[in-house]
Image (spheres, rainbow, N blue to C red):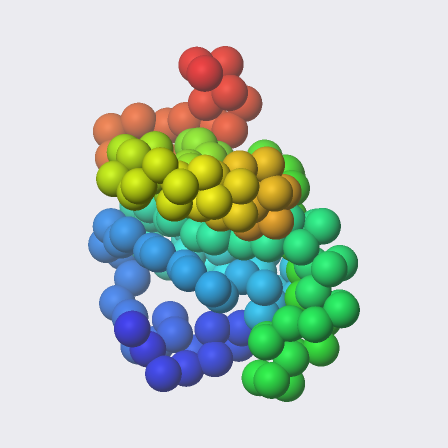
Length: 157
């Protein structure tokens, strides 16, 4: 964790490069302008030898709805962005889109009472939630011992 503005690249002086990393970004992407976020992810891919990235983000629908009322505004951010196509972000950054994850795995939902499951599925784990929030996994385009382009990765899927 660093106490620096990730948009301007100071973090690269604080975190040694050339090593493999796992990056978890929770509640971060919406604070960036799209071009700033592309720069950050591109920098991650070039600064480290191998990157595994798990990030949540708003969908474009959630970004539009946030204009009506969003606690993010309290931080001074007036406009947020969302993304529906992780493949496009992968192409722009040189990372490889691996997969989309469920925000709440089914095994966790099944631990709730029947009534709680019904409510939770409607509000937090169904189409409504998926239409607003996404959880994406990316990796660097080259992992140790192999060279894989984004198009090669798609052919394997």
